[in-house]
Amino acid sequence: MGTQYYYVDDNNQQQGPFSFDQLCSIGLKSDTLIWKEGLSNWTPANEVEEVKKLINRTKPKPPQPVYAPQPVYSPPPKRNDIGKKFIWVAVVAAIAVILVIVLKNNIIGGGGSGSSIIKLKVESAGSVGLSLTGTGNVSIDWGDGSPKRTHVLTGVNKDEYFKHEYYDAKVRTITINGEWITKFRSDNQPIFTSLEVIRSPSLAEISIGASDTYFSGYKSNLTNLNVREAPALMGLYCSGKLTILDVSRNTSLTYLHCSSNQLTSLDVSRNTALTYLHCAENQLTSLDVSRNTALTHLNCSSNQLTSLNVSTNTALRHLDCSSNQFDVAALNALFHTLHSERNYNNLYIWLIPDARNSNFEIAKQKGWIVNDSPLGPW
Image (cartoon, rainbow, N blue to C red; front, side, top):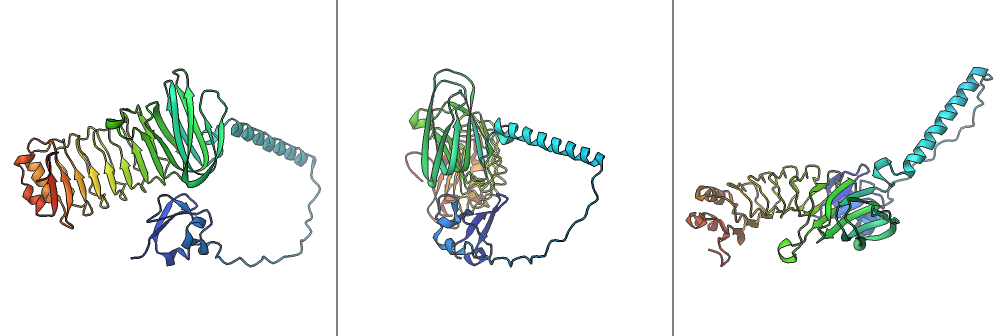
């Protein structure tokens, strides 16, 4: 099968997959976002080499026939009609003034006219840093009365870094307005407590929290994360103190790393494009991955799982379910659900008391390398 292409339509919805021949008949614009295997992010059509020649290929419409204007005869207005017209003009003018005031005070859409609006909350003093990727103008209101910073993002593959200092502990809201933001990243920033995407048709990646809490020593204070208005989101990394994570509307998600939180449940039933799921170090008592048939990597270690079924996950190559509460029967049942599609798959079941009493041979005969101890596989 040849290269498969996806694109974002005028309603900010992902379409695809399409073959190249099918793509030729769509009538792409130069700023239409394209993604295919090998691209790290959604990319404008005029930056994808083989797609350039498809732009502006649509046939021009024939000119409309020109007709001589016909005279229109109307009776002279009555005195009452003149009064009604004056009232309507006054009403329209008043509405226009109100709209100008509303826009000026950033009431519509949470502020600004950009297509992406992201709000973050901080509650303590200290330095805060974040990086943005995308194209077009972007402004940042740090929420402490300092002047808004306006910059130009110069490319979907170029990160721009922004830093600010808070000298006292107060609750503040940072508002980011951007024309076309594709990536937000702020690792090792314990100062953030909340991130909310008000709207963003272009945001493909979010990374917030400590990149590695064990080695870096940072512990994020993130308690709220709302990404429901980011329909193009493909990668999400979030660690902190989250008790709820809703990704039901992020159907393009392929990478989800939500470890080191306080989640008691996680619904990924609508995230059928997921290939990587890392939900370790939470408080999960169950996990349903039956609809995530594209998964190649699953790490659900250090939870409270008592069973796991991966019978539909035939692409799985790496499975880590260490430090859970499986008994011998549950482990053997898990081994039976493992696929036998390819060899040299890795299964990790460290720190499970009954692991040594389970039947490893069930998994090994299916081509899995069973690791039940940090000292090595069996």
